[in-house]
Length: 591
Image (cartoon, rainbow, N blue to C red; front, top):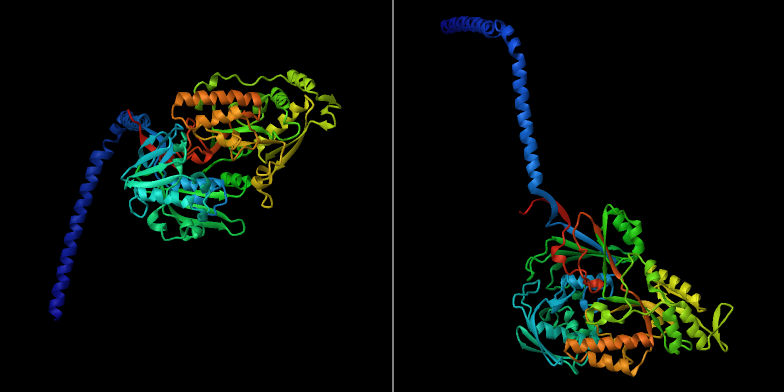
């Protein structure tokens, strides 16, 4: 054993000597090569160092040039533009008490209706009535209308949408026990299914503007046919509906127990028959007041806000937000209560018309809205633009009152024991209040005393509709009248109109309005409406002040309501929602 160990140690020593010998040889060779190629040539390297530096600088410059060229060409072919995906959050006035379109009344509830549900017809971004679910319509003397439906529409649970759903919805609205908001509109209208994709409406009398009524949201029969109409408002469906629109409801979130503030979270409908929206998500944030909306915009809690008052714009960062102003098919009017002692006299109303400078009033309104001096939107009626606007002549107004027996006394017109003192009522609104202030100043010049009353519609102890409108509790009402997509203003100015806030009645005007709504001949309709407008300007049941704007604000990094859109009503600003975006990214330019 000891011999083996001795031999092993001897072998290790031998290998160690061999290794050391090889190491010395390598060291000597390395030293020779270093001396030969570095030390001995160092002077030569120093001689060519300038060439080396120039060569290295040239290579660096070439690399930099290639980099600059790449960036240059990238900028030429790539740009920042709106891209799909993301979440868009819009602030609106609430509350959201229901998501059932039969009961929608607030801006937030009406907005949800347009996003979650489909209708037979809807207004497009040009302001024209176009088929949504409808592919065509045949009318029989404006009394019977047969509508054909597209066959590729489905409810968000996958069930097909058919004519039976349309008939079910109309009958539900007509049922008094359902307490639907639009119940009165459908009384006397019968509806029947022709086949799975055809429905027929029959009216009690001819009505040329009936297609405008086909913008109602359609409900699913298969989910609601077993629900009692009387309990529908309080049903689970009204809180978590299934629709057929471009978005589906994911969650109705309550974010403030004390305030009742809610957020409707929606997802894009992947199976929407008109194509999936570019947004992945859209949410409606319902606020109780403008101050809350301003704070939400400032903090970035929302990316846009709709139907807000104009004074909010001044409180926002214009570098961050873009403001879009679009005229609505509404009219802000000074409406005379023609049964008032002084206003019964047409000459008094004509004098007030002469004394009213609507251009000066519009100068006090944000965005200087368009003039509207007719009882409908001028562009809706052929030939209406040829009607001359009322003259502005305060001197002539004073002479007319003098001739009518209204004598100026201590700055106020009097006639016998009566003074020309008018209570003018309007809703709390920055634009309306500015208009009323200027109006009072103009009328004061001709001796008319104005007592202003500003009604706060947010006060839960008061109700503008019942306390003011239904009782006609005013001498003059300054308010907005919704006109819509058709010039049929029967409800406002016919003696039998349900919304005749002026108590106006004139046999000629009644005849023009009645005959215009029953004929399908557009030329004849226009002639009737032109004749009515001229009579309306002569009788002066009201004075048109301006066509109000939709004030829409959205972040500059998003794409929403476009400046060139035509918007019929504030709740119809979602016409182009499928193309809205919430984000921007790098995209290649198209040649």
